[in-house]
Structures are given as structure tokens and as C-alpha cells.
Length: 185
Ligand code: CUA
Image 1 (tube, rainbow, N blue to C red):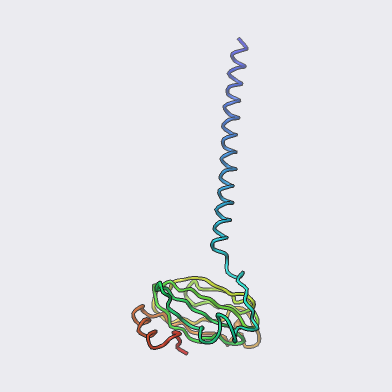
Image 2 (cartoon, rainbow, N blue to C red):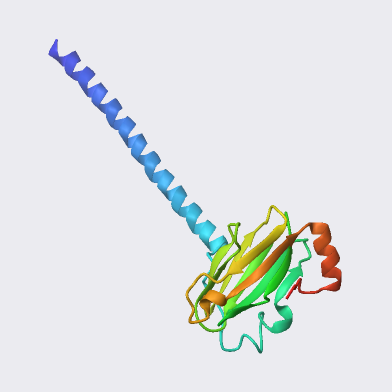
């Protein structure tokens, strides 16, 4: 009578082993999917800070020359802002931006590490010489915001800030028709 008992025990052991094999295979498959997904995602959307730029020629050539700074409306209706930080000011010093519109910031520094945040919003970034910082955000409400430098950059750090005026999309487009660059400084 001991043979069927032993066989039943073996069956139970095999079932349990198979179950655990399936669990561990599923875990490995899940981890492979996670690795593949993050790899593709990071390749498609690299984090900011890895786009290099020569800080010594910013003023004379390339994306951050004076006429390119400020606000521009892109073909798809979204807005791009280019700004330059240097001891101890931002260029532009004041920007007009539309509410409820996708806004991409692109900025860099001409000298040391600066940073900026738009008070009361989640817009917050560092500006590192040699790299372009870029992020996209949307302001939900109209209003005026201070945009201070938030990385200690020297004796004038505390006096380094700019202004952001968020207006309705209608007002923004009206102002932009006569004010290329969206400046209010
Ligand atoms: Cu620029 Cu602190």
C-alpha cells in the first residue's frame, strides 16, 4: 500500500515544481519586458542634459544667438522658449506665454551653473554650461510669476531673476503678431 502513497507524493511534488518553474519563468519574462521597455523608452526620450553645446560660441552662432531667444510659435501650435543664463541675468528678462498650451523650454548657460524655476508651477531646471536643458510643460492658469535663479552662481545670484506673464491663448497670439519673441522686458 506504500507504493500508491509514494506515487501520490511524487505527483504533488511534480505539480509544485512545475508551478514554481512557471512562476520563475514568468518573472524572468517580466524582467526582460521591463528591460526592453526602459531601453526603448530612454533611447526614444533621452533625459535632458546630454545634448552638448559649445558655451564659448553661444552668442555668435547656433541655436542661442540673440534673434532666436525668447518665444516662438511652432507649426503645430505649440510654443518654444529659448533662454540664456549668464552672471547675473536671464535673456530674455521677461516672457509672455500662453495658458493651456504645450510649452517647450530650451536653455543653457554661458558661464557657470545656473537654474530657474517658475514660481507656483512645476517648471524647474538646471542650466549647465556645455549642455542644453530642455523640458515641456503647460501653465494651467493665467498670472504673473517670478523666475528666479536657484543655483548659487556668484555674488549677484540673489539678484538674478526674470518674469513670466501667462496670458490667455487669444491674448498671446494677438501680442505675438506684433512682438516676435514674446518679450516683455
Ligand atoms: Cu544664476 Cu544663481
